[in-house]
Image (cartoon, rainbow, N blue to C red; front, side, top):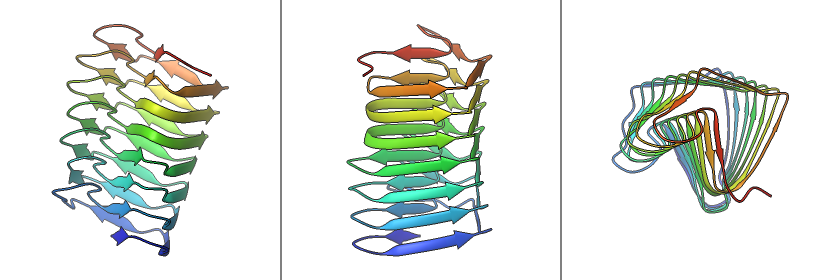
Length: 193
């Protein structure tokens, strides 16, 4: 699914399985001022260069309520989701589990974007050759409330659970059994506002 310009899409209980993109967003890519609303959707086994399941770019926005992203893979960053260049992502009770990125952000990768997560579970994701096993914030803003970050791994980098060079805020969030080869098994934070 590709959205651009002022396109808008609303999806409920839709399954995206084993889709492949040579570029970004194995199942869904939104660019420009496009807007996407998801509810109880499933993204499983999708593959792309960046954003194995979803890529949000150039000011696009996505709101999710209760979707599951599992076993997605990127050959670069963002095993499940990539958020870049002014895009925004709001997650409510979303599960991001068992995704893999070849470089950074096994679950999510954020660069010049905004992510707000409430009641999210980021579990058992892998950054194979980089940092941020669960979430990687290169630049941008990450806010997590009532979250669970568990069992993620940065195999060759830092921040097993979360790696952030942007602004990161956590409230009532539990970090358990995350692993990093280098620094910050649970969290690696720098330049946090």
